[in-house]
Image (cartoon, rainbow over all chains, first blue to last red; front, side, top):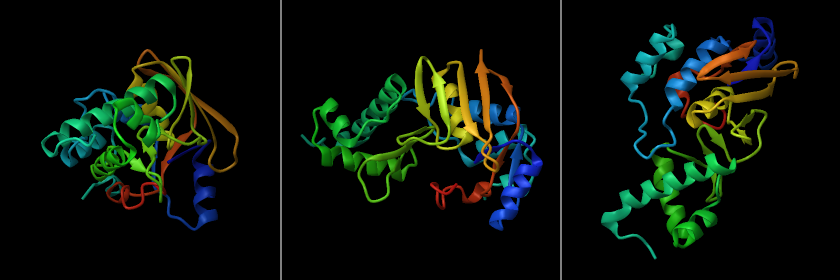
Length: 71
Length: 154
């Protein structure tokens, strides 16, 4: 999971490695995902999100592509 | 002294808490021996706890070694995702985890990395619980259902 300057840089990176283009997030989406995923991670009561919770989060962030399905 | 069988869950919780609290406080993920010394245990007992925590994906162990590689969002080794927060320097495992460090700390933070393609320096800033500045795009190469097939590659 890397940061790129633009769509063109992502495409060039994928082409150079013969890899399909994956999922792309704006920095704002990335921050909202990170905040929802990791807030409270340092507390003893933190627990991993269930598959349902994670998919609901992806949906809330507008990540509806099959790329973001967990099953 | 090894924990009693009935106390394993509590011991694992103590180990997990120590690992994350120490990493947050120092910027460095503690080694197996450091955790053992801090908790009055021997290395192999902590190594077993690490194995259990890794099986639950709380941490990721270094290949072929008993030490922690990732206590997500933190990396135990330097990476290209450097995070400055609370006056310390941390390393994220990827750009998502780099953003996850100020989120986990509940602190402002500056993430410095490079474009995955051309290597140009890039930065994102978090202030007051919001993304204050940042350009570019995050790219996830591995579909979500396969992230844990090979988490190091992901």
